Image 1 (cartoon, rainbow, N blue to C red):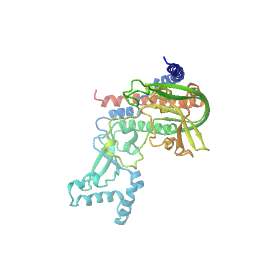
Image 2 (cartoon, rainbow, N blue to C red; image 1 turned 135 degrees about the horizontal axis):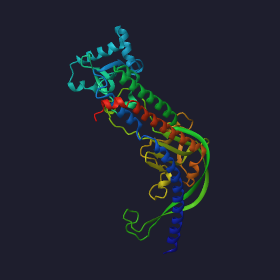
Image 3 (cartoon, one colour; image 1 turned 30 degrees about the vertical axis):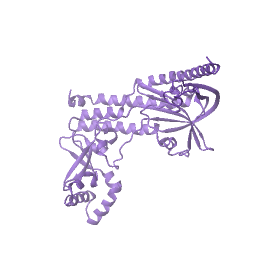
Image 4 (cartoon, one colour; image 1 turned 180 degrees about the horizontal axis):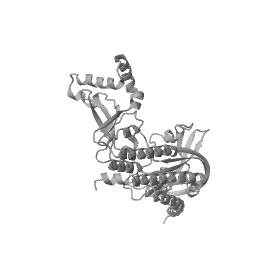
Length: 405
């Protein structure tokens, strides 16, 4: 073997050994955390919520469809401002004006394709319980309504206090009340744990690694994918020290409907949604003088799956620092434009990768601040999962009466 080849191979093997060792140490710690996380955490809480509640309430929540006025929408939506103005001029209520608008529209002699729902604004002024929970808008001559029902997957984010007022059966109303209280508590607590930026100081060791390709000069396929003589090596140039100044910590975010934004029927009807439980931690250095954010790496924990930035550091073809789980929400446009930075002076800071591979991620994961933030999120998921299971047991009679089993 030529001397250059031997040097490159020996250097590559030594470098790969250090990367693998660092990765294995980090994986061992993350796996321990994942075991604790998986022990009592439901995989998709919003989906479990909707599936159980709709089954417990039966094929029809109410025998006859029942609706109440969505006062939040009527009073605060931008479209209704013009409706209120015209209602005052006509000395009628906003609800009557909406019906009047629909009646006048139905009398117009226009091509049928222009009368489709997307060519005419139909304000969703009612909250409804019927086959399921939903929103309703006036149609036809203004005396009828059409309802968009929420699928089981969307029940979690769209359920409201007004929907309970539409339920005549006390047992069903009490069940829905308990589930709504759970949803509100979940949303309030998760908001405090999602997209957080936490200040901390953690020293780090970074391996500055070069990726070198060696190929014969006389080589017809050089530079192409058919170059069978090309060899790639990782070389560790040196280990440098740096410092983590902040971490971002997040969980699956929850978007509770504000009763103002109009519901899109194509999304509202989804029976299944992807909202997996996860915890994501990213390690950063924020330089307020240079106005830069340096990314050192990340660690993600999901249900029966984990990911961290060292896992692909030994791969020649991958140059990215971050290695997230597929379900983790990230800002594809600009990292510093993400939700964790919205209310900080660091928004729109220039983002750059670290100088090297984070060799001491195991030590970073043992840092008290990092452990505390991960533990907070594990405890949140554990408590919420147990609470939802308790709710299911408390309403088991209603569930089995209405379940088609």
